[in-house]
Length: 298
Ligand SMILES: [Fe+2]
Image (cartoon, helix red, strand yellow):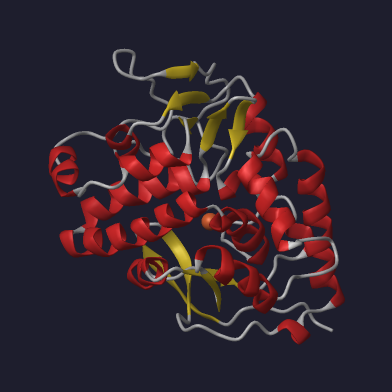
């Protein structure tokens, strides 16, 4: 059987480049349509990440993987995940064709629905894929939705997104950077050492190692306005990782209305992805910046 592929509508030039645009509706996960190859891709990625993540991913993430009973027995059924999730934090996965327009995405989060691309990457894309597939969305994001504080943070983010969308593109960019540097590429400082919680990292073999062990990137303490004013990389591993102390810190930092922060940042030049602010940053690790290109930040 052919590997399942999503229904792409068209490619469009957007502020994030020339990207595929998908149908935005919620679909039924076409579970019986997955090929043996699709299931094998899940199993390979799952085993690979589970071998390396103990001692690297935060305990809340590892607990979530276990509690869902995720395993290498083929692609999970969203309905099974939803049974566990509904009881724990009231979240629900919805199957979608791919990346969603901001306002549709925010509306899902604000209503405790997490959109998951139903299709999975091809065997030749195990190490890199430019857009989120089922493995990234499900394995990367969903385990932490069992954590009540993180679950609340995600909903608050969705509500904030709807507000930012109404304010304008600069506010939206500020908020997108927050998502990028926390939900996708966040690190957390724990009693046992630095750990990963960002979905973009835990779903990537290379970045699971690089984010914690490499000398090149900065690791800097989380500060809301600092993060919102920092550009990022979409084509390479990150040049800076921001480190939270706890999910409570993250949730509390994002409780106030962001409108005054957006106003304050409007006239400021954003920091480059690799910048270290000597005066104000709480630096966990000053990156060597070896091999960094300086002209391709988003
Ligand atoms: Fe993601």
